[in-house]
Every structure is written in C-alpha cells, then in structure tokens.
Length: 573
Image (cartoon, rainbow, N blue to C red):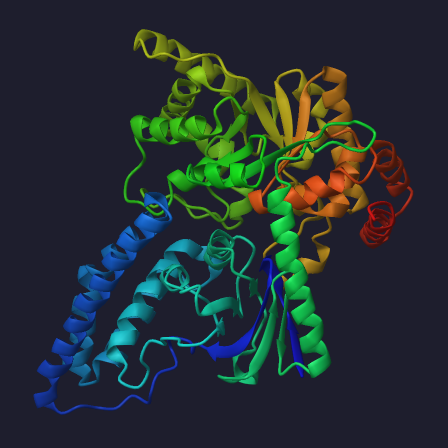
C-alpha cells in the first residue's frame, strides 16, 4: 500500500481503479522521413488542426449549455491559438527543412512559443500558458498514432501531471469519480472545475506518475488530500464507511439548509456565499446562503478578447440581483493582477505580481475600465440590495481617490439619465497596512470585509501556492489574529459591519474563532455553508467568545489550531 498526500480541493471519497494520463510531451524518438513523405506529414498536421478546432468548438457548445456562456468563453482563446499563423507556418517549415514527422515539428513550435512567452512562471500569465498547452494537447492527440483518447467503460480515478480546462469539463461523471494531479493549487482550473462538478479532487501530489500504474486499486480522499494505492482490506473498509458517511452528511446538510444559523444562546450569524459568475448565485441559494458576501467580478473579464461593455456587465449584475431578490450582494470591483491577467491588452510584467499593479491600483490607473464597471454596478443596484467592495486598499489616498471617481460616476449617470441609487462602499482588509490603519479607514468606509487569503500571505510573507513554503501558510498565526482583532475592534468602535470572505470562513476552527471575536458575517464557498451552519447551531456564542480569548494566550499557529479543534469537538457533540 502506498499513500501520497497533496492539496484537497474538492471534498468527497472516490474508490476505483486508476487511469493514468501521460504527459503530452512524452514523445517517441525523433526520426527522419523521406522527401516524398513530406506532403503527407503536412497533410496530417493540417488535418490535426482541423479536427482539434472542431473538438474545441464542440466542447465550447457543450460547456455553454451545461455550465453557462462565461465558462465556455475559456475556449475562445483556444480557437485563436489553433488559427495562429505562426503556429501553422513554423510547424510546416520544420517538416520541410528538417524532414521530420509532424508530431516532432509541432513539438518544436510549441517549445518556441513557450520561449516567446517566457520560460519561468514569473514571466508570463499562467492562464495563457495553460491555454497554449491545452491546445497543444488536443493537436498532439491527433498526431499520435499510439495513444488514443481514453474512453472509460468502468469507474476510474483519473491521475495526470495536470488536467486542462477541456479535459476537466469533458469528464463523464458516470465513469470518472475523482481526479488527482501532480501540480496545481486551490485556484487552478482543475480545482475550480472540480468544485463546480462536485467531484473529489486532490492536486499538488508531486511526482507520482512513475510510481503508479493503470488499473491499480485506489482511494482518493478529496477531503483530507490523500491518494492511496493498493489499499489493504482494512483501509478499504474504513474508506467505504467514510464514503457512506460523507454521502449521508451531504444529504442531511442539504435537507437542513433552511435552518437559521443561530447559536444555542440566541446569537444570529449571517452566512453568505462567495461566487465568481452570475450563474453561481442559484447554487448559493441551493445551499442556504443568505446573500452573496463576495462576487468576484474579474471572472467577467478573463478568457476573452475584448473588455465587457457597461451593458454586458449591467446584465450580469442584474442577473445576480434577480436571483438573490432582496438578499444582500457584495460586489468586489475588478481584482485583476496577481495570478489573474486580462487577455485584452498587454500590461507590464511584474516580477512580484501579487505585490504589483493589481486590484484598486490597476483600477485607479485605468479609470476608463473602473468607471465602466462602477456605472454597471450602480445601475444594477438601483432596485437591489447591492454593496460595493474595494480590494487591496493600502492607503488613505486610495480610498479618497476611489470616492472621487464614484462621485464622478454618479454625476455622469445623472447626466445620462440612467436610473441608479447610491450604494454602500466598503473595503477589503487584506494588507497589514490596512489592518494597522483600521481606525482611520473605518471612518471612510461603510463596512469592512477581511480577505484572509491575502492577509495571511502578506503578513507572513508566504506564497500560498508554493509547495515549498506551504507550511508557513498559517491561518491561526498570532500575528494574523492580532491584525484581525485590531480590524474588528476598529469596525465596532465606528459602528460599521465587518465580515470574513476568505477561505478561513469555511474552516470550523477559524469560523468559531471569528464568531468569538465578534464577527457576525461569514462568506464562503456555497457548498461549505451547511456544515458551518450546523456548527454554529451547536456551539454557544459565550463558548466561542471564551475560546477566542484563550486562543490569544498561545504563541504558535499549531497550539491555537489544536486548541480550537479539541474544544469544538468537545462542545459540538
């Protein structure tokens, strides 16, 4: 029996045979071809391009009908790559001048394109590189004679170096009951699609492909982040029971989704949903969300060849308003940069993108884009319970400039005679400088929302998607908790609401800690809401407050986390 551990990105248990997908660049040895075979190889390559584009267009249609147009737009960029003049001409040139097979000629072209984009993760957009490799993978599948696309006739756990968007959305849930990859993070395409499809998934397992084989018995634990190969009868029985319990629990959570999230001693906690696309608002309601605490609007801007117009954005925000009715919806303005880049124009490449030209910094320098978005939000919020949230605020000047632009936008809407209403404007506290200035910021904002994902990253100086330093990503680090406490205290003194919208809101230990600190609003992935609701209904607010106070007496993340975990287990029985 072998056990591999990675990042759990989509919960659940899968028990099935392994199906191992090879890396696309595992090619047969290169060999020369005779001159008379050159036209045949060129024809093979051109046919591969046609077939790959046909597949992509078909996938795009399927995704649009199942998941919505926004998800389908990922594949528009793929079609552009296939029609790229350089890709075609360079490959044909390699076939003619070097007298090599199309598969190797195409491989050389892809290597050249990657060099043009840049060789390291710092030098180009990860999304654009993934798009290129996704297209290459599809073309390679038609050029390879010895490796046909896998079609499953029995349940499998799919294992690969990485899974592209087209592979992930093409998964047949009838047969693929889980998937695992060597690389990836919580924000990778694989993770996002796994959650959307509600399939167990583990990423970041490291170099495992050479240690496993097709057809081996396996268990995938998407809740704890394990891949177990050739499990013993005892382990297999244990996980069969865990799987049955997970299914029972999921059904129970769904049936109890309409219960009020109130502590036994009568303190009401608002549980809201984090969404990225308008269509996800329906999912949020399905899991009992009382509103949207974070609408990540940047996904309306990604994987497309133009900027969304004011009308297009207005319709998207209006759709969310229609679904949520009078429930609150917090719309975060464009948080581009970091690991998310616009495809519509070339921006200077940051050596440290998470610390560079992103979020409100980007918006203040591109007022045209910012004002278009604000107009759409104000208009859609005319008859809705909308709030606007500004990300990555670090200085007073940024808040002042944002309010100036908002005033300009409202004046322009008046002149254009477009209906709107003034909306509450809050800020995300996700940078240490913002937490340290929370008292000042509270006088300039209508509400605070703690973006704990970045707050942890910036406070401890740790890249949260880097495996080598992942041990330093500590939600209960005393320094982080002190900044959170300062923020909550400042918000309460100013009489404004404060919520948490990071991943820590969905972790039982930190969720109870936040409640104990006085935070009454938590926003998380929709599927996490029922579990946190059940927890809230079991633990008295007085006990949560007591735990929060005690937590500050410890000096390490491990001590605090274990203390909270044990007390929750004891109190929440």
